[in-house]
Image (tube, rainbow, N blue to C red; front, side):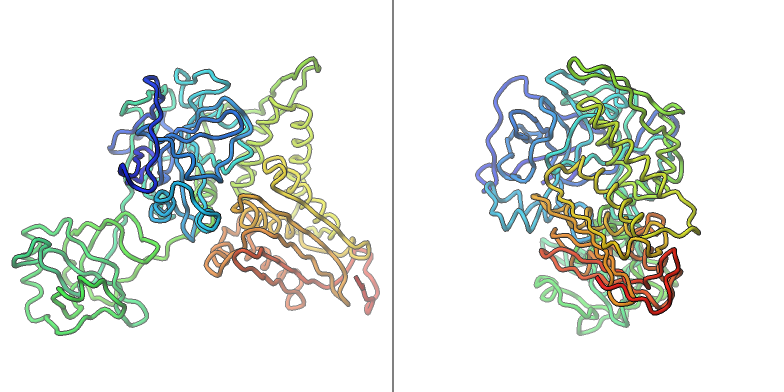
Length: 592
C-alpha cells in the first residue's frame, strides 16, 4: 500500500476492503508530485507529507464520497468522515490515521483499509480524518485553472464544518531547510514544494509539485548479522541496537546499503567478536533468533532512516558504514517531539521564523451580502496580526478560528461580524500585561469567548456549560490560566470524538480556597497522550505552563490536578487561595 499523500493505492482485488471502481471516462484524477530536491528561492509553498490513502472527496447530497486514485469508491470504509457544510465540493486530500503521539500511522490505517464495513469499536478505536490540501471544484465549478495560491485561499473560505476534515498548513516565505527540520523534529516523512502560481494538472506528474523524503541520521550498535534471504554464505543483513538503561535494545535490521565493500569491512572489524548468545535484552523476531550470528556489541555503525515506528524500530533504514573509534556508550536514540496534533506545533514553529509574506500588508475588508439584505463589511485580521496571535496562542486555535470566520463571511455576514467581535475581545484580553492580575469572573468570560469561537467550527458537536458562584467572582488569578485548560478539553477531548461532547467550566468556593474545574466527556487521554499534552509548547499556555504561572503567583498554596482516562473524558482542577480584589479579611471562608 502506498503511504504518500501524493501516491494512493487500493487493496488487491478480492481483498476484504476492496472497493468498486467508479465508472465514467471523465473521472477526476489527482495531480502527482515529482520526486526531487526541494527548490530554493521565491515562488514556492511547502506542505508536510501526511502519510495515508490519497483520495478525492466529492461533497454533495449530505455525504462525502471518497474515491481513491485508482478510481475505487472507498466511502463505506470510513463512515465517520461526514460531509462538509458546503455542497458541490471536490477536495483533494488524504485519509489519515494518527498514532499515539499524533503522527500519521500507515499501520493503523491498514487496519481500517482491510474492512469495508467497520464496526463501531473499530471506528472508535482507530479513528481517521480527511486531511485536505487542495480544492478542485466549488459549487460544481472547476478551480483547476486557478493558481495554487488562489486555491488555498479559496480552501480557507469554504465551509468544511460538519465532518472530520483537517486543512493542514501551507508555508510561504520560509526556507525549505527550516520546513525539513520541522518535519524531522516531529517524525513526519517528507515535504512537498508547490509552485504558488501553478494550476492543477489532474492525472499528471508535474514538476510544479516536488516531493522530498525526510531522512534521519542515527548511530547504532551492531549486535549480529543474518545470512542472505535466499541462503548462502556471507552477510545478508545486520542486526542493530541502541543502548538503553545499561542494556541493548533491538531496533531492527538493515540490508539496504550493505554492499560488497560493506560486508568485507564488517568481516574484518568483527574478527574475534563472535559470541554464543544474543546481546539484545528484548525479545526478537523468530527468524532472527533461529538464524542469527551474534556479535559482542562493540561495533558502532551509522544509518539513515525514515522514522521511528510506534514499536520502537527504525523505519526503512539504509546502512552508511561503520564509525571507527566510536564507543557504543555514546550511542543513544533521540527524544522525538510528541505533539498531540503534529500540525499544530509544526505550524507554531514555522510561524515564528518568518511571517507569511504572500499576503499583502494591512487588514482585508470583505464586503458581502446575502439575499436582499444590505451589504455588510467584515474586516479580517492582517498577516502581521495573525502572526502575532500565533506567537501568543496555539496555531491550531488561530488557524481554525480565522478559517471559521472566513467561512461565515460569505454564508452569514452578521454572524461573521459577531464572531470577529468575540475574537477581538479574546485577543484584547489575552494580550493584557502579564504582570497585572485578573479575576475568576474575567477568566471565565474569556474562556466563554474561546468556546463561542470553537462552537462556530464544531456546531452541535460541542456543548458548553459555564457556571461561576457569585462569591468567587472577584477572586484574584494570574491572567490566561483558564482558557488554555478549556482549549486542552476541546482539542484532546472533544475533537477526536466523532459525535463530540460537552465542556463544563465551573468555579466555586471550597473552604478558604477557590476551585476552578474544566472537564469534558470526550475521548480522554491515556498516560502517553497526557504526557504529550503537558509538553505542548509553553509559549501557548499548555497545562505545564498554567502550572508554572499558578506557582509563580501563589507558591505552594495552590495546586493543579489532571484526571484523565481513555474513553472517560478529562477533568482538570486548579485550587488557589480565595483572595479577592477587595482584599477580604483573613479567615473569611467562601463556601460553595
